[in-house]
Each structure stands twice: as structure tokens, then as C-alpha cells.
Image 1 (cartoon, helix red, strand yellow):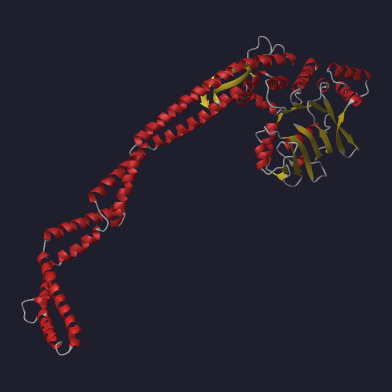
Image 2 (cartoon, helix red, strand yellow; image 1 turned 180 degrees about the vertical axis):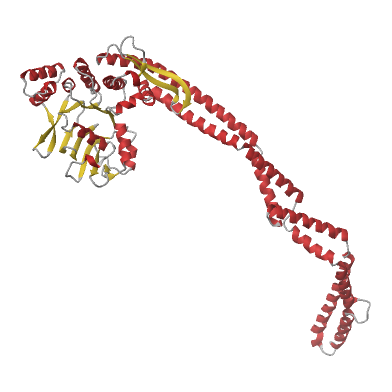
Length: 561
């Protein structure tokens, strides 16, 4: 609920404070007095567009300030607290909107500067404005569907929520399947390429360290004869048949030292060392003999090694990897193929998930459709009853629910049809309703929705009585009062019949000194209210007959003058 609205330097209004209370409050005033500026100020604190030309001439900036409730149950309360705004202990928050004549607009919520969009998001949930521009929304199928869903009640809302979740799940499954099918050829080509690579690596079977080992062995085989000659020379020098080998010389030296130790024991260590040299030379000669036994020229084996090295080199060139990296690559490809081996199964699983999601979505859509069809009959009858009270007794209303392709809000198109008088065909409200009729239809729908239950709300009607008069105007006032029994209602009107039904009456008046025009906003009661209602009736404040009619009208509307 809005508690008050303060305006400074906005249009013709220099400074005004508009008290707002529960129930029905009407705002009246002469043409050009500034009633529109009251709504402009309200629009600013609700996040409406700010234009510098709205600033009063001579002022640097215009300011609109309001206080409204943020109940604990309000869904947008978290947005407000997340923005750092301060909510008072009584659950209210102050919003200030400043519009500079040459500077940027500023939005302050709960003491914190916030984006204009946040004010709009919060305001949209708290206040519903019905004006000539806003009535256009009734002409759209989306708005008509929203009205029907709201009227259908909380159980239908739960069904709609289930459908929206199912629809989102189906869309996700459909997109997943579409991507998989679209990439199927690419995926198959990738898997074929991987299989070819794995086969080539399996055929090559290159092991880490294999190239180095082959190259070393190849060096031996390629120089086998030279190695044999050199090994023979070394063997003969150590322990060959010659009488001047290393072994013969070392043996002679050992014997001489052994004899010498009999006369000089200090030579024993040296004799031992020479003996060790002798043993070493003998062992080396034996190993060389074994080496010569193993060493043989094998052209076939050398050719095989060259072929193997050629195979390894080809694999290195193909995969751009060193020989020692080929086996890890083979293992990686094998693992990747193992993970993708079930591609067909995964495609089928995605297709099955899509079919299940679609079946659930269709099931939920049918539940939503049935709820809308049932609510459409009740809503049409309820609105017709209200239109009878609004001096449209011959109007016939239909809420038509027709099938369509599933979308985010169901598988239905909802349209509001109107037959304004007997014999007239039921046509879309876009074509069948005049401005005045559309205003009354909007009011009838809001009253119906209010009677259907729901949290308290604030409604603002900008000349909802446009195009009506007489009994119809009185009926509009009575139905606005009925709506105000459970909601806060603010109405800008020029009709006395509507003004007389209000619990609170605010008058916007203007005064001019010939150079500057200033508007004032004040709440009227008692005789002042009779005077204003009389002016609305006849245009004259002091007419005795108009004042008598005003008193009668106020009494008949059950509002004390």
C-alpha cells in the first residue's frame, strides 16, 4: 500500500503532499490544474521514464517521493534488500526520484541509489496503473491469458508452474537432441579418424626406449667386421699366443716380486697389485673371447632393424610426436574411443529423454488447458455480472481458449470476446469495445479478480470513467468502491458520480498571478467536498441546486459530506 506521495517542482505543481489511505481515494480538479502531474509523480516513483521538460520552469530539478509497504510475503523484497535499501521496522520503504532540468535522473530506494529498472520491477508488483495507454494491454492475448490464469486461482497457478518447469525441461532435451543429431556426421567422422589412428599405432607398437635400443644395435651390426678385428687385436695383446702378451709380462713381474719379498717384505703390497693386474688382464681377455664368439655379421638382421626404424619414423611423422610419446598417445586414443563407444546409445538415450520430457510437458499442458477452460466459463459469467452493474446489461463476454503449439505459458491461445448488445457478433475486445466500454471491462475484471482473492494491492485508475456518464458513471463509482473494500484504489476522475463514492477526496486546484500558475493539492471534507462535487456536477461551485444535488449524491453513495 502507498502511504503518501510528495511532489516538488513538477510541472505546474510547486510543492504538494498527497495523503494516501486504504480504500478509495479520488483526485479531481479543473482541466489543466495538474491532475496529470500527480500521476506523473506517481509514475516516477514506480520507475517510469523521466523527461527534463517535466521540471517546473525556473527550477533545477523535480522531486517525487513516496512511502510504500513491502510485506514479508512480497516476492520483490529480496531485490530491495539485495540492493542495500533500508526497510524500516514497520515494513515501509521510502523511494525518491529526482529529475534534473539539465542533469541525469536519480533513483533512491531506502536511502540507496538504485537503477530505475529496479523501481519499475518493484513498483510493477505493488501497484497496477490503469490509464488509456495501460488499457491497451487488455487488448493483447498475453494480457488476457494472464488475467485468466490469475482468476483461475492458486491450484491452477501450481499446475502452470509444473507446466513451465516441464516445458523448460523439454526445450533443454530438444536442444540437446538437436545438437547431437546435427553433429552426428561430424562425430562419426571423428570416431572413424580415431579408430584409424589407433589401428596405426597398434600396428606400429612403438615402445618407449625402442628407437634408442635399435639405433645402438644397428651401430654394432653395421661395424661388425671392424669390431671383430679390433677385439682380436685387444685379446691377443692381453693373452694371445705371443710370448710378449700383457699376461706373460705381468706373470713374470709377479714372480719376481714374490721372490723379492723374501728379502724385503715391503714389496708384498706391490706384488699383490701386480697380481691383481694379471687377474684383470686375464678376465678381460676371456670377455673379449666371449664377445668374439657372439659377434657375427648378420645383414638380414641389420635390414630388419632398418625397416623397424623406418616404421617408427613414419609413425612419428604422422602423429607429430617423438617415438617415446607414441605409446601414451595410443593409450589416450583408446580411452577416448572407449568413452565414445556408446555414441549410438547416447543418441538413443537423448531421444528417449526428449520423448519422455515432451510427454510430461503435453500432460501438464492438458492440465493447464482444462484449468483455463473451466475458469474461462466462470470468469466470463462473473465479468458479465459486473458489466450489468456497470450499465452494460446487454454485454456478452466470452473467454475463448484455443489450442496452439506449446509455448512457455501453455498450449493455448486465450482471447477475450465481447458482444456489446444483442444481435452483435462476439468479436475480439480489440474490435468490439469503445474506449468507455474498455474502461468498464477493465474495472469489471479487476473487481472480479479482487473477489476471487489474492493479496492486497494498490490500483490507480486514470479517468477510467472516460466516455461514460449518468447511471453508468454512478455504477463505475460503486464498483470502484467495491474494489476498494479489499484493495487501495486511487482514481483520477472528472465525474461527480465517481467522486461521491470515495472514502477520501483530494482536489488539485490552480492559481495564477498573471505571470505564474501554481497548483495546490489538498484533501477536502465536509462542505469543501460538497463544493467540489457541486463543481463537478455543474461547473459552478455556488449553485444552490448543484450543491443540493451534490449532497444528495454523496448521501446516496453512502459517503458523508
